[in-house]
Image 1 (spheres, rainbow, N blue to C red):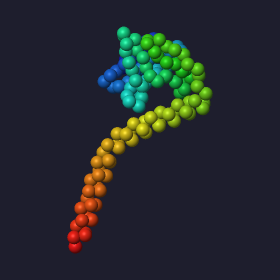
Image 2 (cartoon, protein in one colour):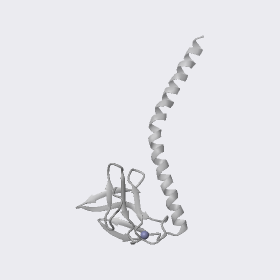
Image 3 (cartoon, rainbow, N blue to C red):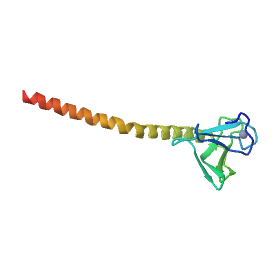
Image 4 (tube, rainbow, N blue to C red):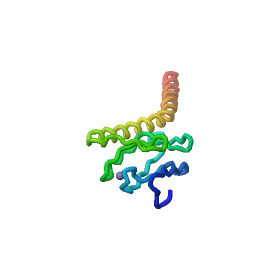
Length: 128
Ligand SMILES: [Zn+2]
């Protein structure tokens, strides 16, 4: 990621799974968006980038909220404090759901093993 970003350009690093651009309002704030299953998704069609979901810079003074779709910026309404809170909660929810679905695979196997051990122990006990 270059230190100085050029406005109107979306920088994407697949290696570091992050995209960066200067805020579309012109305030020159650097907006970094991590890419990943629980973060933003980046798509390029005919050289035109699309980032999903929308970019809500509620941490910036400008409070910009917009979409980058097909290489153009579509402005969205500014977020109310309630929407910001909702957006944050949605993010946490997505992250938790993702990690829980990944966790589920392993403890599932462990639980099965535990069950089997218990059955063996039960059998051994009954034999006496
Ligand atoms: Zn801005």
